Amino acid sequence: MLWSGWGDPAEAAPLPEPMVGLLRDLLGVKTGDAAPVALTEIEVADPRLSGEALTALAGAVGAEHVRTDAESRVRHTRGKSTPDLVRIRAGETADAPDAVVLPGGHDEVLAVLRVCAERRIAVVPFGGGTSVVGGLAPEGVDAFVALDLRRMDALVSVDEVSRTAVLQPGMLAPRAEELLGERGYTLGHFPQSFEWASIGGFAAARSSGQASAGYGRFDDMVTGLTVATPQGTLDLGRAPKSAAGPDLRQLVLGSEGAFGVITSVTVRIRPVPPGKAYEGWRFASFDAGAAALRRLAQDGPLPVVLRLSDETETMIGLADPAAIGGGSTAAGCLAVLGYEGTAGEIAERRARTAAVLRGAGGEPLGDAPGEKWRHGRFSAPYLRDALLDVGAFAETLETAAFWSDVPRLYEAVRCALIGTLSAAGTPPLVMCHISHVYPAGASLYFTVVSAQGEDPLAHWDGAKRAASDAIIDAGGTISHHHGVGTDHRDWYAREIGPLGAGILRAVKDSLDPAGILNPGVLVPPAAGE
Image (cartoon, rainbow, N blue to C red; front, side):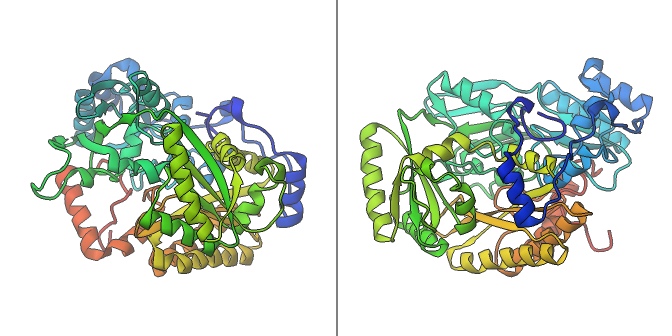
C-alpha cells in the first residue's frame, strides 16, 4: 500500500487536463503541484517505549518482528481517510505508533496483550490499514503499538459439507478469493477497499460488499470467531444459529479492536458462479429510481448487485456518453445491476427484473454501463489521490435509514454539506448513490469534492460535523459500513443513548480492564472523562 495514498503506486494516474480545468472553473480549485513530501524527508519522534518494554515484546513475537524504524512507523500511521492523507502528505506524524509488532498466531497475540496490559501500552490492531473513520489513531495514550496481523494470513480449513472456511485475520481479500477459488468457492465480498482490506478488518468494521444484495454483508457471512483479549480467549460460534442467550458474535463484529483482537474468522462460502452479467438502467429522477430499487428489495427479483446514482453522480459518471452504448445525453439517474448464475438463470432473472423496472419507469441502457462500472469499481480511491495532487479535496461519508426516511435523509445531508462548505468559501460538488438495499431500507453514500482552501482540514471538519448532525436528526445511522472509529464516536453515542453507551463501557471494562485496546475508538467515554 502506498504510504501517502491509496493502493499500488503503479495504478495511479494524473487527472486529465479537461478535468483539471473543470475543477478550476466549477469549484474554484487553485490547481498546482501539491505532491506529498518524500518519505525519506519525514521525521518521526523517538519511540516512547522503554528498552525493557521492547525486550518484552521481542520475547512475545521474536525480535525480528518488532520494528521501530521510521518507515515502518510512518506506514502504520493513521488510516486512509482524506484528512489522514492530507496530514501524512505534509509529513505530520504526531500520532505515529511507537513500534510495529507482527505476531505469528493467536498465542503470540495473547502474549503481546499481556505485555502491554502490564505496562499500560495501548494496542491498535492493524490489518489492511484502510480505515477512513479514525480507527487507527488512539486517543489519550502515552505510547502505543500497531499490532500488524499480516503474518496471520492462512486459510486454516474448508468444510465443504457445511460450506464454511476458517481464515486468519491478516489475509487480504484478493488472497482469500484466490485460495477459495482454487477449491471452487467464493466469499462474494467485494467492497471498494477489496484489493487492500483484510478479513479481520471486514469483521471488525461490519464491512458491506458491492454484491451485498446477493451475498449479504460480511457480518451475515460470519459463523464463528476466535478473539484474543487481555483477559483470555473467546471462542464463539458452535452452530450457525442458536437460542442460547444473546449472540456474542454480534458483540465482536463491528467492535473495531476495542474489545479484543480477532485471530480467526469462520465464514460461509458459496460455489463460484458459472457466469456474471451487468447492465444499466436510467430513471428520470433519484426518487423514481429509489422507488424501483425498493420494489426489487421488497418483492423481488433481487439482483446480486443493485446500485443507483443520483443526478449529479450520474452526470459526472456519464461524461463519456458513448460508453453507455446509446450516445444519449439525457438527464436522469443511472442504476447498475449485476446477476450471477448459469446463462439461463441470468437471462430469466434479467427478464423478470426488467419487467419490474420498466413498470417503474426505467429505461434500459444495455450492458455497457454495467461493464464500465465493473471494470472501474475499485479505482475511485486513486481518483481521490489525483484530486489531492492538483489542490482539490475529495471525501466520502455514508449512512442508512428506513425507506420512509431516505428522501429526508438525502436532502438533509446534501444541504448540510453544501451549506457548510459554501459558507467556508469552498462550495462543493456533492454526489450520492444507493449501494446497499434491504426490504426495510437502504444506504446512502455521499462523495464530496471541493477546493482545498486555506485550511482543508478545518473546512471538512465543519462540514462533516454538520452532516453527522443531519444524519442523526433525520433518523439515519451514523455509519452503514465504514464504522465508528474516533470520527463518529460522539454521534454514535447519541444514536445508542446513555444506557447503550454504558453497556459498551461495561463490556470494555470486563474484557480490557487496563483500557489498552484501541483507546478512544468506538466506546463513548463516561461523563466527565
